Image (cartoon, rainbow, N blue to C red; front, side, top):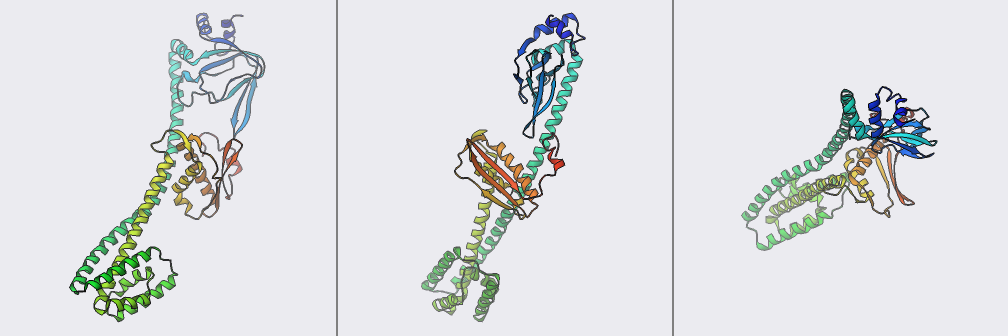
Length: 420
C-alpha cells in the first residue's frame, strides 16, 4: 500500500482528493520508531505533526512532579503536534510526551508545510485555526500579565509602606533641624550680647563638643528613669531662672547628663554665662540628634533601594553567577512590611554554598511567591523557616511555615492553569 493510500484510510485525511493526498505524502515523511523510543517531549517546540500509521504509542505528562500516563493507543490515524503552524507563542509546544511502546510507523509533517497546505486547501479553516490559537494565547498571556501585575502591585505597595516611614522621619528631622538652627542663631546673638570672655566661650564650645560625642554612645534608659531625670533637671534649671527648662531638659537627659554635670558647668561658667551656655549646648545636642535621625532614615531608604536593585538584578546580564542567600535576604527586605506584623523568620543558611548560575531576577520571583505564601500561612504570628543545604552536586532551598497547610482539595489543583 502506498503512503497516499494509507493516509486516505485515516479519519483526518479521508476527504482529501487524490491530488491532495499525493501532495500531502510528498510534503511529509514516513518514519519508523523503535520500541521505547521517545518521539518528542512535553514543552519542546511543536515543529511537526505526527500521525500513527502502525504500532502503539503512549502519551504521558508530568503533573505535580510525577509522571502521569494519559493513554496508550494503537488507533491508526491518531495525530498530535504541529501547533507551530498556527503561532510561535508558549502554546506552540508539545503538551505531552509520546513514546512508542512497540515498533511503530508514523507520518511526520513539518509545521511549516502544514501551514502551507492549509492555506492552499482550506484558507477559511486556516483563518479559524489561527484565530482560535491566537485567542487562547492572548487569554493565557493576559492572565499571566494580570497575575504579574498583581504581584508587582503587592510588592510596590509593601515597598511604598517600607519607604514611607523613613521618608516621613527624614522630613520631620529636616523641619526640626531647620527650627533648631534658627534657635542656635538666636543663641549666638545672646552669647554676644552677654559679653562673655573668650575663656567662657571656649568652655561652652568645649562642653558642647564633649557632650555631643558622648551622646552618640549613650545607652538607653528606662522610660520611668528618663522621666525622673527630666523632672530633676527641670527643677534645677528653674531654680536658676531658666524659664524654658522644659525645652532644655529632654535633650540634656538624652545625652546622659545629670545634676552633677550641671553643677560642674555652673562652677566653670559662672551665673552670667550659665543660661546662654546651657541653651547653646542643648541646641547642639538637639541638632546632633536630628542629624543622626536624618542619617538613619536616609540610610534606610538607600538600603531599601539597594535591596530592590539587587532583587531585580538591574543592569546585569540575565544569566549570571548569583548568591542564593543574598537573593533570599533581599526578598525578605521587600516583604519587610508583612514580616513586621509578628512573623518570626528563621534563617538556616549554609554559608559555604557556592554561587550558582541562574536567572537571578526570575529566581527572586520564586522566592517572593514562596515566602509571601508562607508568611500569609503563618497567620501574622507564626514562624517561617528558610533552610539551604548542599545535596551532592545540587543546592537545596527549603521554605516552610507552621501554618495550617494547604487544604487537600486545593492541593490537588495548585498546578492547574488559571487556578488560584
